Amino acid sequence: MSHTIRDKQKLINRSKRIRGQLEAVERALEAELGCEQIMHLIGGCRGAVNGLLNEVVEDHIRTHLADREAIDDPNADGIEQLVGLLRTYYK
Image (tube, rainbow, N blue to C red; front, top):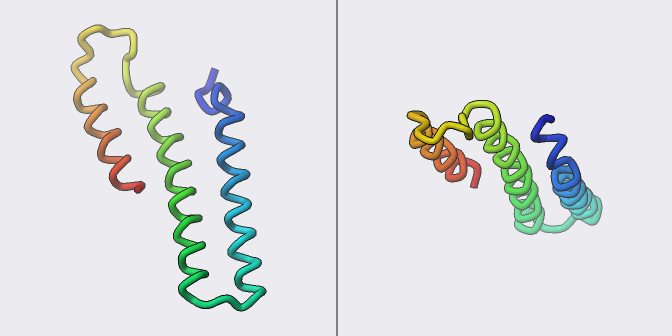
């Protein structure tokens, strides 16, 4: 079973929240709100999309690249470093 199927509802819920944020940007543009308010809304959307992307990428790494069954996986430290790097990048 794919990790995106296993966590399907959680990922769908996140995408729905992102859709709501994008709709708020659209409403702000239609209402001709100030640039600062619109940029703030857009920044929130970008952060939400990055968070969703990070979750999918991290699950992909842990599911398809890491050997969770191995007790002494020689790649375990490198995988944790990669996941940490991605968390920092997608903030």
